[in-house]
Image (tube, rainbow, N blue to C red; front, side, top):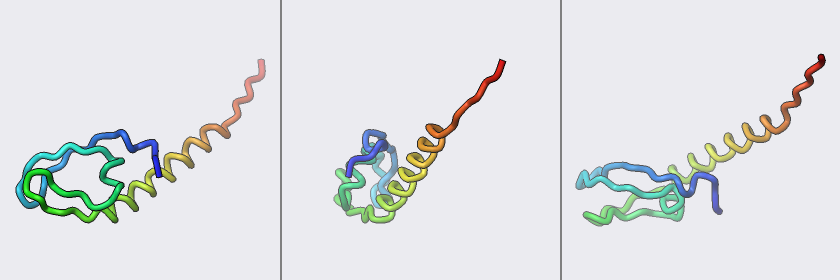
Length: 74
């Protein structure tokens, strides 16, 4: 599933080798991620779930903004 956050880049350090990693949200949401430096495999299940929650919140906020009607009387 493609989301509005997919192209956003996250910078983080591998907890094993401490190598700085830059990766997109979309790539991290595809499934387990492997550190390109040391091969440590990250379970991205919680990240994917949290990203989906953020996406829902953003979509709800955008819907609410779209529902705002301004009446100006002169």
